[in-house]
Amino acid sequence: MTVKRYNAGCAYAGEEEMTQVDDGSYVSYEDYAALLKERDALEVLNDALVVDCDELKKTGKALIDEACHVYRRYNKTQLPDGDIVDEQTIHELSNAINTTFATDAAIANIQAQGVDRLADHLSGLNVMASETSVREFASQLRKETGNE
Image (tube, rainbow, N blue to C red):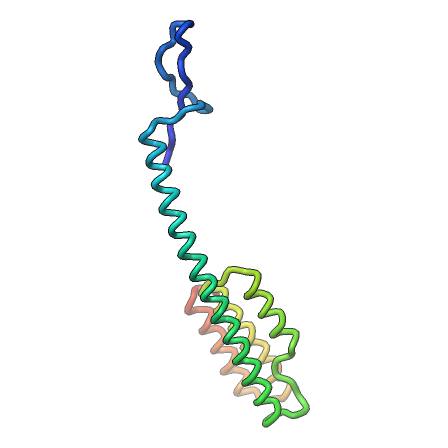
């Protein structure tokens, strides 16, 4: 929206009308009302986004807790001497959820990075078929959100 700005004329100088200027001190009531309406709509949208962001953070924290539980149990039963997901990675992911806004594309990218790390780990174990399928899955996650 473009807002027209005005300066008031000086009555004693014979300028009794408002003149339109780029850096005027006044705006028309209609422009003001339209801006106020737009601001109110953006405020409502912002409030809704804050609620969505908080819900995404809660969900992300729950997923991290569940992932920690699953990975620890897997390590105990399948790889007692190894660690598929190190604690630093989980800690960094937790910090990211607490300090950044989550979007579907960002979450998909984080998931794909985790899958890439799993593929790297499987590669070290010489499990090539699984590595290939895991990398394809990571690529699929990125494509779903246009992140590749």
